[in-house]
Image (cartoon, rainbow, N blue to C red):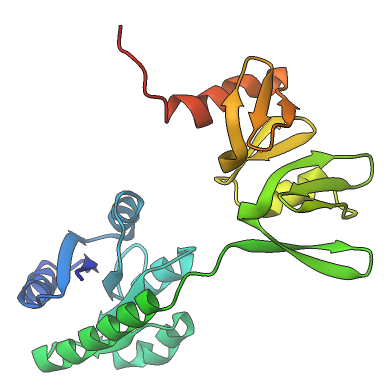
Length: 238
């Protein structure tokens, strides 16, 4: 297992040293070296990064603030010449905190912590994504994969699953705000459909895997074509 690694340091001499340490380690795969937070953002947008090795004190945006700004940061090792930053760094739960000048033996210890974390994470089966809604006096847990579609009613929504339906007192806007947008597709003012529940898409309706037909609203037709059909369609070129 290779651990995709990103280096963030504004000093060229330290970039070279850290790059050497990374390339010497057989479990690490150096994806990129960046000298600013903005360039690091670009790398994270294009690549799956498992480990960020970051300096803290940089001219425009500190490494600590950079990690804080990330919604789902990778594992982090901070490297710095300033011991006083240690306490501040631990609010973002880094794997380790290394002081410059770097010692290769100490660097290996930090990488072993990373490796153990990655191995342990791989051994734990992922939790099926789910959400809770309140129905009557109970909170009902619903797995995303069990939902076929969601229909807006006057004062509540109807969540139709493979096993039945649930009628929580909730607005469609509130529910849509909280759900993962890459899983559900808005196809009508009153309907959200689970992408994997779709069997066929026609001009005016969607047929689900259970045979139910869901209307397509005029204002949503282009978005359905762009987000769900065109991105995955395999057709003849002529």
